[in-house]
Length: 77
Image 1 (cartoon, rainbow, N blue to C red):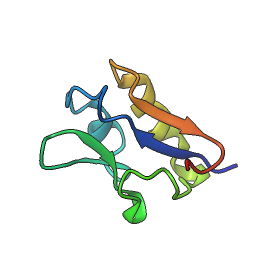
Image 2 (spheres, one colour):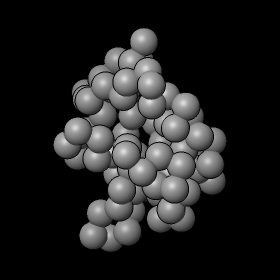
Image 3 (cartoon, rainbow, N blue to C red):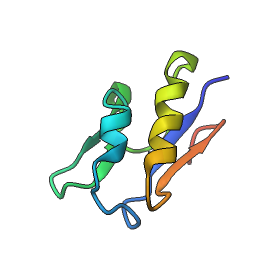
């Protein structure tokens, strides 16, 4: 089953760990904060992350010191 993800930018400390773990999913905005960029998601959490990329996503979640990466099985509103 696909997963959906987004970054809570209020909690992000711009450490870079998610971009290192999953560069196809996460990049950084002009303020250096992480955001979901996979297939143009623009950190909305509405683009499904394919099962083949779930390991990268999980690595990013586990590497985040502030737990600001949110993941669920349905799109975020």
